[in-house]
Image 1 (cartoon, one colour):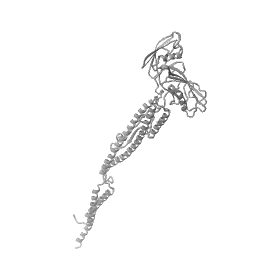
Image 2 (cartoon, helix red, strand yellow; image 1 turned 90 degrees about the horizontal axis):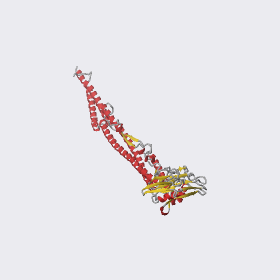
Image 3 (cartoon, one colour; image 1 turned 135 degrees about the vertical axis):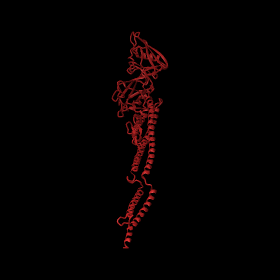
Length: 513
């Protein structure tokens, strides 16, 4: 290379080295101070793109974990409410079981007051934890968590399906709405509809007045033979009148000797129950605020029965005259009993009742007049059948109205003192099962979300590690590089000084001339 004073190649080389070494030093200082190997896309464009994907997944999963933990908290709150409702159901079963015993001597209305209050509390608590019918949790709960396959909604979400009536835990969803532990009975709804509500606490009944209920009751007499007795049960209101509860108490004090109980039905009207064969019709009250509508009627539907009054197919009784006869066969677990009515033993309805009850003695089947006193009601606590097998039509006389089988009506479960309670117990048992299924769904949902959180936390760790491997600076290596960069820079500066002084050597060539 020729010696020149115009272009100092060595100086230019040293200057370029200083620029490179200074940039190297600056990059190293930036990495050490930021902690990142990639501080701009120019550092590693491809690596930055991959690192950003990992960072996005981490951010998504971090929020997903928060979502899942919030969902778990909500379900745990609901689960606590379900446990409390389970305790209430236990209490309801206790009350229903107590009322379901025929030996219960207390006031079923008192039991039912607590029972109905607890039903309302179940509704309140179900709404409080949002699991009432149509509540915000009575749906398919979907929690978005994210993950490696977040582009697929099914892979990124956890569902806890609490939708539908089966998962609602209010009394409608549990299937116990309308249940009660009141004493059951036959309501005064036949004939003239009874519309008087004894549960109206604002009314005092029969103030200075009275009202009778005319009963036809099957009463056991000598030798256990049942006889039909006409019994008028009169309720006197006295000067200040009676509350609905006092009316029932007054009736029970008079009816207890016949095995008949009075109570207030779910709709607030009077009902009468027991296993005794009876029918009843209300007389007119002597004044206002009657305890039942005049002329309203009932038979004891707690028994198997057949009667023209109940609409079961019997005709109005007609006195037997002439050679008119009618033969009927009564069949039950005790065997069969054949009864023949004629002008001798059934010339009037009273004699017919005596003949029937005498023949049916020991069968458990009783014959009493219907409420209107114009036909005969056959009643029994056990199933029985009736078949009219013969009829001679010379003269008058009629019991069932035609040859052949007569339809016997089965007992209504709500007409017995324990029927409502027994029915409530069956529904409560199913409610416990329904509640358990919902609790199982909630518990399984909590577990699913916990497992999802565990996976998400693992993914967060691994995605963060992957991002770190690409983006984070190697501090040890970069510290060494900083020392190297500083040495190179100092060496470059020293070399530049030497390169800048090199042209001065040319002067020594010129000094000899």
